[in-house]
Amino acid sequence: MFTRPLGHDNVREWLRSAISARRLAGGYLFMGPDGIGKAGVALEFAAAQRCEAGTGWSCCECGECKRVLKGIHPSVKSFAKPADKTAFPVELVREIVDEASVKALEPGRRVFIVADADRFNESSANAFLKTLEEPPKDLTFVLLANNAAQVLPTILSRCQPVRFAPLDDAQLQRATQGWDGLPVSPEGRAILSRAAQGSPGMLRRLAEGKVLETARDFLKSVRDDPFHASELMTAALTGDDNEAKREQLRDILALLTAALRDRMSGALGAFDVKPLTRAIGQEANSADAMAAAVLRLDDLRERVDGNANLKLACDAIALSWPA
Ligand SMILES: [Zn+2]
Image (cartoon, rainbow, N blue to C red; front, side, top):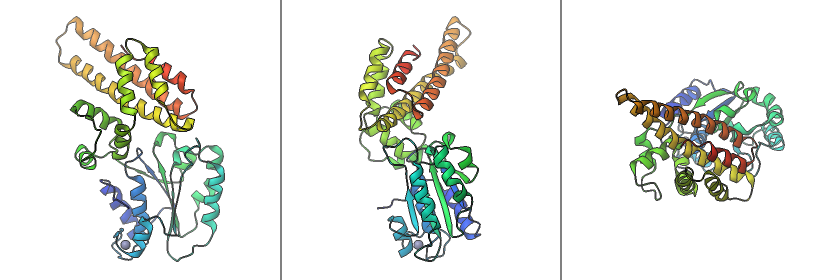
């Protein structure tokens, strides 16, 4: 069952006005962290283009809207990278391009929703560019990307970018009401929300899986025994394939980065208010060390997105963790 994503009213309003003014771009690129609501809004946007109610947006009630939101409308298709693949396969792009060139079964606008637009490689992007630049007149592409920094410039330049803002605290709280497994302490919740970048879907993933527990275990042991901490982290990565493990390590790194930023703002806060004593030097040093560590973590996260050896990546995180 389709649930309307919370927030993003400005995005909806902006897309609605494009539909009303009949000024739709051939391609849109929705960018924002996993689970923030991009796919849900993309479906609403597709339904809005076919809705019978004529309000300019999806009424969610008419036959057209219902079929689109259920994912069974022949004019609205969704595509995503197979879970076990690191890159968006060129064969799938050819399928999309072929589908786009076939005449629609039903009159009216068509929408193709393409997830994982940040996982195109040179060859899959090249196979897509011409169609993305000049799609058939009745067709709109909506590309979804969790990681804006990883979208190839050739893809980015052919789409109208749409950024999805993080949900604010009140919206996030509403979205997570009644969930089990969220940390009890306000600090724990704050770190988790920050790591989730205002995305309820990501918050749920971080809180429900072993990610939170692994990050905790790592933090407990990293100062005394970094190699042990690294072993714990490596052993916690489970899954059928490397891609699943990579996904988990990315989540753990997001949590560790948030925890580090938390400590860092604590140290900087102390630097602000304390009188000029020797302690300031120490606090400043530790804030510097943490800032450096945050940068290293960001760098590592990028390498995990690439093809870094996961065991070595865990070692590198543990050994460079600021005391
Ligand atoms: Zn409708």
